[in-house]
Length: 327
Image 1 (cartoon, rainbow, N blue to C red):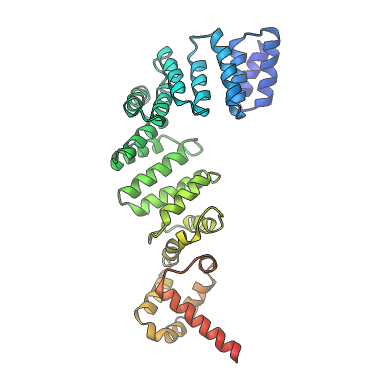
Image 2: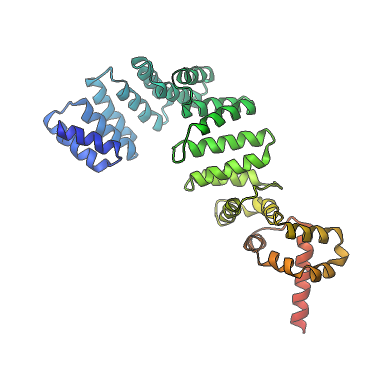
């Protein structure tokens, strides 16, 4: 009994080797113990061995066929194997055994959504929300259904509710931030959408897809959230080998122009290109600030510059350098 308690405690703490060791001790004495078998299934699942997890959970279910949590775990193992229809069956079985099991209804909804059974998915999500009105998985699933049907406003509402229900560190927070950002972009709220996609990257910096999603949204945009955090994220995007720096150029210009003195300089140059030398001489301090800006230097080194005024500055700089060389 002590070994089983320790196995469960280690599973809850994510200590997989210790959990497996104690579960096997239980099975050495009681080979069909459903709880120990369930622990080994959970360990396999979290170590990426979903096939093994299915086998362990099936053995556990044969001993406790009416245990809703074992049925749920069987559904999750099949979901990770992309056997979504089978997964939905187990999730539904878990919900039937435990009618207040909101997470099981939501998981069934996700499985049905992934195989295109929209009406079944919506039914399951709404059943989940009847039992847990702020359940993030169900709100995210309903939002995705809305996005698929072209209802960006409805999607944004569901994603917003889900985000409010997920504190920092919640596994779904980054996904909800990203999905809300995409919905806001579709609604024409560009600045807010980009800010949300940037927050998603901050919430899950190891998620390569989140970075690529933000980079895609920045393509051709002339908007950029006016925060130091966004500037830093943009610089990191330029360094990523999976992102085309050309897609970041207009956003970089937008960030540079957020500095009032640089924006005034570039506007003066664009408005009177024939007086470029005089403008640069008069605004030498600001021009030096622009040239020494790390983001400006990164842009020059990686992508064409989509700004006429900056091109004029570069032409003048080249001319000055040639003159110095000739001298």
